[in-house]
Length: 344
Figure 1 (cartoon, rainbow, N blue to C red):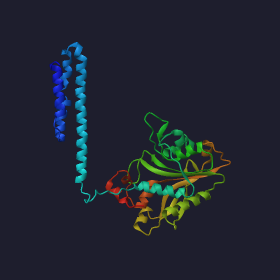
Figure 2: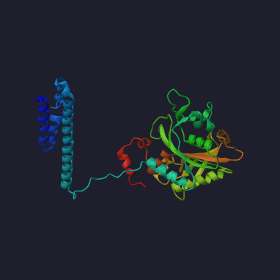
Figure 3: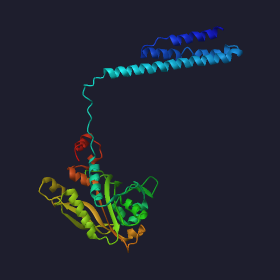
Figure 4: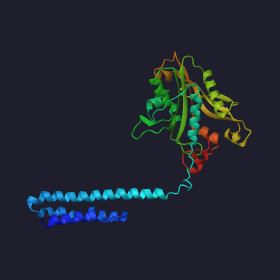
């Protein structure tokens, strides 16, 4: 055996005899035998100086040497890791108090959204959800608001860049349009979700907020059915003694249309302020589905009729929790949100 092969044997002995008792020793082993400038690396370069008839055997020996070093490194590392883990477990004081777990909380909008959904699910309304990026037809035209309709001025819309067809939905009425074009009556749904309007952000308004809209279509649906449904909602939300009133209004997709107020009274400073001294608080819009909307969605208005309603969830939250600034609902301030950790 020539000098080069003897050199391999010597390094092999060093690998097996290297004393490793700690992680520091293991790191020194890695640097010497497997690091960037390890003692095995030059041996690969020496292959060119080996006689041709011995090159193959020499190369195999060098590769074997490297494998031996890698195997010993992994075996010792596994043993040291297991030893350290066992020591850590043995040193663990099980009598010490555990780490405190901070109680999480639901967002006030989520609390109100879930409550509203629960109220309507009890009387047979199914939850319908759809996309937030909508096309113009489902958001406007299907709901009786063509391009030249002045009602479009009621909602300042966010259109996608370089597009006049796609937009961020301005109301969840677009969900109603999609349901009416894909399902046959009877239809009884609520459509909760986030909507967007290009409005100036202030204490009372925001460019994004949440709505829950309702839709019921069947044969012989009347305005009386709508009123009874909304009275039921008011009693569930505001108490058994809740009173409501309906005032004539205008929406392009309902006829007749109304605004619904709930009676809060003026006995306290809070209710006086919320109702601006009238005792009545406006909470939603509603009305009978315009027959043209049914036609647009492929439903026979001679056979079917229906009602629709919609409310802002933030307004319900502001009222319920006496929050004076809608911006607090979107700032994710933990000091504000943790106040709702005990709310059920």
